[in-house]
Length: 434
Image (cartoon, rainbow, N blue to C red):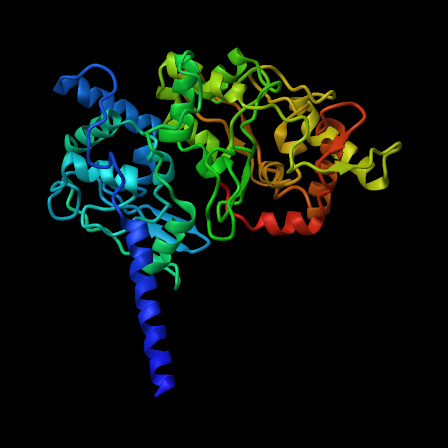
């Protein structure tokens, strides 16, 4: 019967498409199992020292350690719009960790996003960035992880909504959005400038900065070369653009990356944790390289995530209320001119939290307060007290609108940002402090 032939043909097409997608997503890439030595060979002690340093630069322990748990034993929950993922055990335990893995298995996970048994890894593990690593660095990381104390801790199953938990769905996602470059690192910088190339390597690769600082589509994919900022789902912070040319001087940016505090700005929220757990341990050459690369990115006079307000010739009643609240609550620290106190209280003038279209960073700071990271270079940072219990939603909106109009603008004639409403304040008030 013709309908039976049609049904059979449809089934065959579906099966072929299914296995075709799996083949495309899971095929081995050239170099996935071949060494890619860069630089001189290292003895075992040097290899372990390098691996430990690289693990700090990649902030590996933070994700792979549950709160109160053994280091690198996994179990930390990572909430996403698609469900909750739980990080795996990276200790050399033979039953629950990676004790039976070889260097090639680890290299395949980093470069191809595939586990030892061949199943596809979810991109919550940022292998889209790690695929840019050199083989020698992958081997050093693996050697360091193998030197850790083995911890017997069974990996927890992910809690992912269908169809996102299916391997075929992940395979299709990889066909659409994941591609391994021909070389461990695409030519992001001129070979003649080794510092710039090193900075690109760290930012785009091991540092996986694009995981936060690049916007994502509805399926969680991003352009890792963008770095123009993006909303962090679930965590509800906005990671600003890293196109910093004209906004920072090199010494100021290097100080901030290393200590979390510069003469004008302080790090809060997720970035404070990155500096505390990772960047404060980077050597001076790498901090300088990261700074040089970020300052080399094309400058943007106006970002896509910034919108204009009509400058106010006179203050409205709401803004007058905001001005009065600023004098009462904020001026002692941030000063009447919004310039703050160098190395103590951040400047509001030109502060990205005030100029971004999304007010979420500034809202969270006013409501919940926060501290810059306590680092070796800045062990006793000053903090921002929470005002959520003292101010109503309308008052928070008023003081933020006043500050954004006064200082969230690149020039005296162009106000940047968007008006904050009491409804927005109410929504973010319910968020837990970070």
